[in-house]
Image (tube, rainbow, N blue to C red; front, side, top):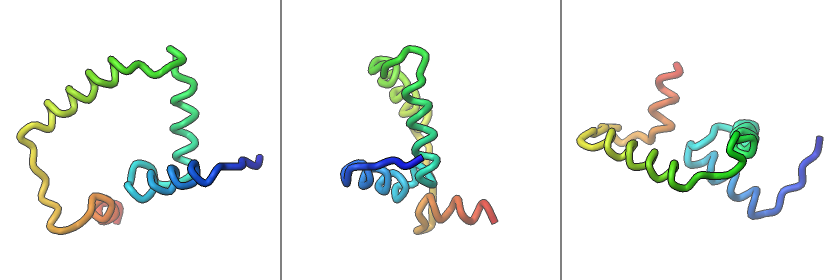
Length: 80
């Protein structure tokens, strides 16, 4: 199957890969497919806000010393 993407879509995918959100185009597409097959059929902003608040609460007081490494570099070391 061939998929034609706009330059903006290509840029968004590359940005997601560079930021470490996803590791590949395939992973990006798989996540997008999961998002559109959500049982509710739409994004629930309130649930997302509550989830974000919970994550921030869990992170409160947590520190991470990366010793100058990016999270991607640190993860790569963990895979060795």
